[in-house]
Image 1: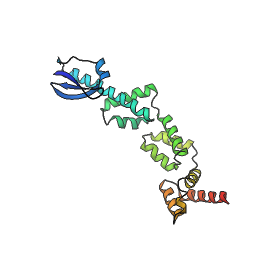
Image 2: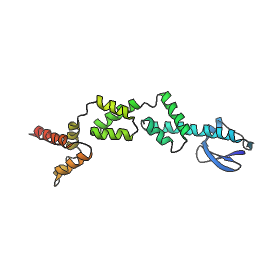
Image 3: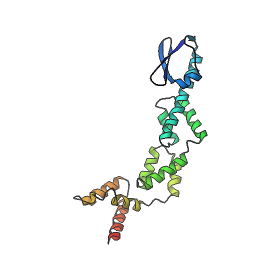
Image 4: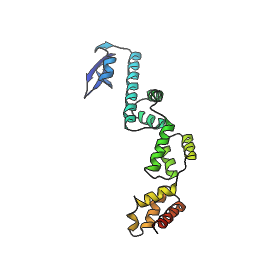
Length: 202
């Protein structure tokens, strides 16, 4: 098989075998792993090169995603598998763990803090959101058991900010109660929150 390359847009390098496009890498990788056009390579050599390319793609994707926000291990791997194979996705995950860029427990604690203090989510919705983000169930259980979540305070905050104007509409209170219940809050907690607000305003 005869290998050759063409320059793509930006830093992209397209690799061809017998003049047929096969895979894309970047100029940085190619400068370190350059093979002269017209070189005859066998299947084993080609697969080794593709494996290196896909691993580097996985590493680069990890850095890109983690630079935007933290991820759980499962969440990050799911995203990697959209563009690279299982083996190289797992290798990249292991590298991120070695470097300390992935830590499910640390991530879960930060996520919990955000969901409670910034989003005023109910305990049940927090659990759902953590599962959705790929946080392991044992970490979710341990964290929620060791954290006191004040649902009533969260409800009061939502009523006084997000839902204050809705209360003035026709059947406003009923609509707000329904909205809060859809967020996972119990009717008893909602009722208690309304009672506390009324007591504070007297």
